[in-house]
Image (cartoon, rainbow, N blue to C red; front, side, top):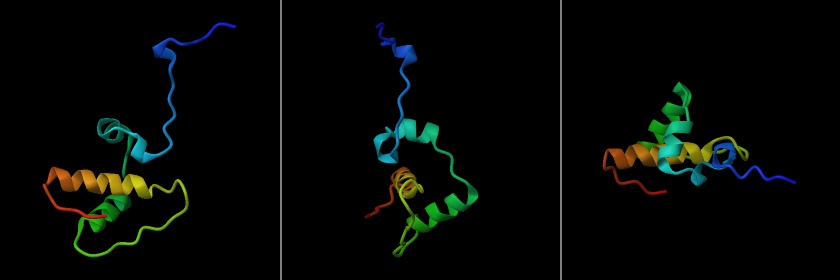
Length: 78
């Protein structure tokens, strides 16, 4: 049996936002207007509860909020 070990044929499936490098995450994630509102709410002062089932994008929203805060040198705690 012949192996397809050629790196050009390597298709990787990443299931979780936290498994992406920052560059890959920014290149591969699109956020809608509603998502951007949620991200702004996460950055704003005060507690925010994110709820949803597995795979709904909670980690992706938090990762983007973290990126925006670091870009603006904002202190953020999760």
